[in-house]
Length: 336
Image (cartoon, rainbow, N blue to C red; front, top):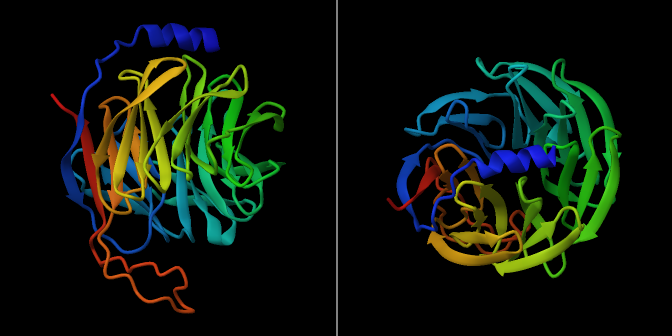
């Protein structure tokens, strides 16, 4: 499967290194916090977790297409085109919500472990995997009926994960600073390795053709892992408070969205050589992003904030309030 993927990648034309800019900003609005941004490239729409619902936004004009309601603690989304089903994590009630990709109507729920967060679809095994932070596990669901298959212990707190397209799944373990490999057929952990010097890995992306994983870490660096060798082969500095990552195989650029209001762009010169080519100014708190690999557009979400309050029992971390209706999507494109 890897050999086949590499052959496909050689047919994709490589685009020269270019600069990126915020081309448009869509004032989407809507109340509540947010998390993962999941592009549906086939239909050019974005699925965005918004606390108690999943927003579906048109990539081209920023219009709200619809919403998946009834979610309690919305985080990630997974798209299964072959069944016409989508899946969203509902962390507050430890469940995975299955919905119709056309009508966005909720079709059912499967029980997941505590703190269901990121979620992906793995095509070779035809299964959906959620990564459950507080439970230190992955929940497996089959996508036709949305039924629970099992829970896989991961030995630490998982964050983002990816499918390699060959029957293996990879996920960051943030508290242990590790990458864990899951065998999607046997539903067991098959390998694990350290991401040091990258501490607290959160976001993840993959270059399938070259067998490289990209982990964005809260310690202000990204780490590139050689999947076959199971070790880190390169690191580069990124912005602070990273939470999103993506890799574009056509441009060979990796992206890392950060809470400090930057999008770090790291170019791949070859499988083991990387360099930071740009830090795009986005927006304060713009830590979540998605990439449409067909249009090569990056979408970063953010909002405006009020003054930071004094510390109190109700707000011990002194988080500033989100200004109502200020949620927006920044569309980032390459210079022409």
